Image: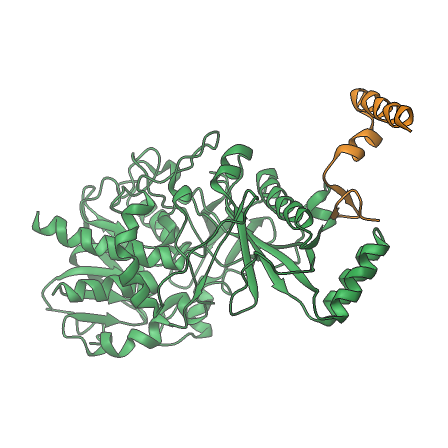
Length: 475
Length: 43
């Protein structure tokens, strides 16, 4: 049912209050509804995106150029699934492991802890079964596969949630502070069009996204004078994106061995052995088929260094056996404390400090992208599948370009999952350390990110959290 | 012919030991020119 904060007066406390109705919040609400629980779902935006709501997402970025913060996330029912690309893939097993020589890497859970929730996650996304990801024979590389969802969580699950007898949805209701007695959350202060109320439930789940989770905790902890997050050293820190850049181009003479999906994109990434041997982070190389102009431009560039090979490639192209492709990549960043969500001096109209996002790329980023692309280039040259060219900035000493896609709007980290409160904000069950009844859902809990788009893992984690909440209540 | 080939191999070994680029190019499986990752025999 839809509800307003005024209508909540006198209503008995809910079992759960979920803040945020993106894929994490909606998945949790539906899973807890299935378990017969009473749930209050708060959404700061309206039923659909609006400029007025997006304005609250404005903020400043420091470090490397990044996207406008009000343009890379959506504050409305359904959250950022109102504008996502639908790319689904679970993280690799290696993404959860501690990597030798890489400080602050590794999760306190394993891929196998999320695997039981894959089938149900597929159902939420409307996906068929996953395909195998075969190795590339003779190369320290493997092929990756994405599945594409067309589900907008707001659109798909709106009717069910608005008609639900046990889930109450309050739109245009923004969290402005989390109240605590030091050991447990005692209520949430919210603002609904200027009306302020304190709402209570038995348990609270913060699911406001990979930037807002940190911002709201930083602000609430400041108001609570440190009583909400007792060990805040990592709060807002270890924030990560998947850098998105064009790395070069490929002239492919044959497709043999490489799989291209329905979008005509081939995905290749370093094998776990190569990552371990070279101490690389995970990297998703994307081979995107280009058109005639791209192909002919590539052949012209090849002709400058290998004219006879270029001539043969042109001949193949005219026979329909060769084409040009763009080499793009998105990869895993090293978790670094310096990359962080912080509070800016300026406040928004609700009185909450706007976000100041510190994001930089370093040599580790460049080495991961360069080495992965170079290995692919060598592989396709060895098998005479074609030739690959690396862009000058990648193989040289120039900095990262600031006019590329930059990031995938994948906001991860800030409230990382850890074994101890010194190392992170939530435990392996996504419960905030030191608070009996506060949990976090979403990619802000990722301690490291792999290269796969995060939404699939967010939904797996939300389903696991729902199962944990119910098990721990009955225990 | 055989003597000439032996001489060539000997010279290459010397260059390789000296770490000269021309020697490395002869034994490398790949070379990079203009960013392109090529086989040594490409043109």
